[in-house]
Each structure stands twice: as C-alpha cells, then as structure tokens.
Image 1 (cartoon, rainbow, N blue to C red):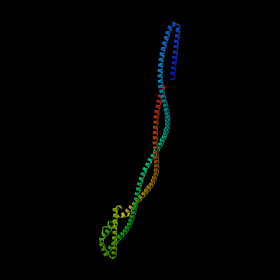
Image 2 (spheres, rainbow, N blue to C red):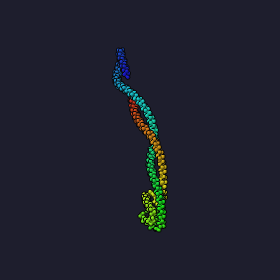
Image 3 (cartoon, rainbow, N blue to C red):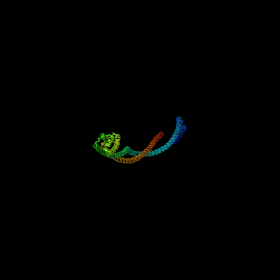
Length: 427
C-alpha cells in the first residue's frame, strides 16, 4: 500500500516535466517561426497564448491534482497507520485468543478426561450400588426370614414358658399328690392301727360276752339253787334287770343295789355259794367298768366323726366298724393307685417337657446367634450403602460442576470466535 502512491507520485512528476518540455519546445518553435513570417505571428502568438493558458490551466490542475493526491495520500497513510495499529491489535488479540483457545481446549480436554473418569467412576459406583442394593435386598430377605424365624422362636419361647408354668403347676400338683399320698399313707397306717385296736377290742368284747353268758348261766344256776333251798331272792328282778341293762344298754345302775339281795341269798345259802357270788360280783363290777370305758371311747369316736352311727352296740362293734374300715381301706388303696398313676404320668410329662425345653433352648441359641449375625451384616450393608450414596452424591455434584464449567467455556469460546470473525470481516 505504501509503495503504490509513491509510484503514482513519480508518474505525475514525469508527466509534468514532459508537459513543460513540450510547451517550451512549442514556444521555441513559435519564436523561430516568428522571424520567418510576420503574417503568421499573430496566429502563432494567439495559439501560443492559448497554449500557455492551457499550460497554466494544466499546471493549476496538476497542482490541484497533486494537492488532492498528497492530501489523499496523507489520509491514506493515516488510515493505513490506524489500520496497521488495528491489525496489530487484532493480531495480538488473535494471538491471545489463540493462546486462550489452546488453554481452553486443553482445559476442555482435561475436563473431558476428568468427566470421562467421573462417568466411569459413576458407572462403577452405580454398578456397585446395584450390586450392593441387590445384596441388600438379599440380606433384607434373609433378615425377614430370620425375623420370621425369630418370631417363631419367640412363640416357641412363649410356649416354653407356658409349658414351664404348666410344669411348675404339675410339680406343685405332684407335690400336693405326694403330700396327699403321705397323708393317705399316714391315715392308712392310722386306720390299720385303729383296725388292730378294734380287732383287739372285738376279741376282748367276745371274751366279755362269753364271760357274761357264763355269768348269766351261773346266776341262773344260783337262782335255781336258791329256789331249791327255799330262798326267794328279793333282788331277782333287780339282778336280772341290772345285768341286762348293763350289758345291753348304758349300764347306769350301781352295784350297791345288787349287793343287799345277794348278801341275803348268801346268808341263807351257805359259804361256798357266797364266795362264788362275791367273785362273780367282783368280776361283774370289773366288767361293768370295762364296758363303761369302752362305751366312753366309742362315744368320743362318734363325736369326732371317725365312725358312723350304728343302730346297736353289737352291730357297731361287729359289722359296722369292719365294713366301714374295709371301705375306707379300699378307697384309700384306690386313691393311692390313682395318685401313683397320676404321679408316674406327670413325671413322664415333666421329662418330655424338659427335653422339649432343652431342644428349644438350643434352637433359641442358634437362632439368636443367626439373628445377631444378620443384624451385624445389615448394619455393615447400611453403612456401606450410606458411603456409596455419599460418593454418588459427590460424583454427581462434581459432574454438575464440570458440566457448568464446560458450558461456560463453550460460551466463552463461541464469543471469542464471534469476535474474531467480526475483526476479520472489518479487515
């Protein structure tokens, strides 16, 4: 651009010099021709004047053209300097933009690499998360199974406690049965002793009855002997009634009522019979005392409810007591056999329940250890799941940050491209 106006200026100077030389030559020619002929002087002068005028006009035009040209050249130089400055600035800015572009491209590449790594990490973390979630579901299913088994074990423990309560009740019943058996054994022993005593009393009463019958026979014989001797005893009725009342009823008559009648008979009958009657009276009195004692014992036993009421003394002593004791012994033996059977059955149930308790305790221990292991695994899985979720959130946050920075860089790069295209269009 600088060389072209200089060349144009040299061309203009050459044209001006050529024009001035031509005009001088024409003027010289005209002056030489002026001497040749005066006729043609006027025409030549006019022509030369016109040429001179033309020359001056051309000069003026040339000067104007030169002035305009120089002014245009100066303006072109100024504009060229401005354009050069702008071009230099544009080149500097382009270089800076290229540097920034390279930096940004490098950053974009690094960010892309980081993004790819993060995507790979994200995919790996998602894969691990899916695996952990599947493992968690499996562990959750196993935990549900263990929880169901735990509920079954809890129910079994509840049943075990109920069975233990039943065992305690059975043991209490067994103890009560044992106490009842011991009481029944004691009552049986007491009944046996009582039966022996009653049998002894029966034997004693039999001997007393036989002696009573003998005494009655002797009294009858004595009465007959007294009647043979002509003695009618006053106490006949009293003696007979006395003996019958004493032996059959309560025996409330005194021995003093019989003594006067018998003494009168003894005085009338003789010494041998008197001695025998005294012996009989003494024996009779002793028998009456024994009968009173026995009846007192029977009344006490009847008051305590140990014996049933009987219609007569003989039936109580002979039939009622024996039947009652036999029934009591039979009932006692039956109760003892029932209690022994119940005791054996309760012992079998207790042994079976104890075996079930031992088996359930073993199952409870196994299930408890399995539940503890499942809870520990579940806690570990929950902790690992939380850790993976934190890593996933951090990776997602980094990805979002990188995407935002990448978007900013893309916008900045597009803006730089637009500025560069605008500068190139201006040039």
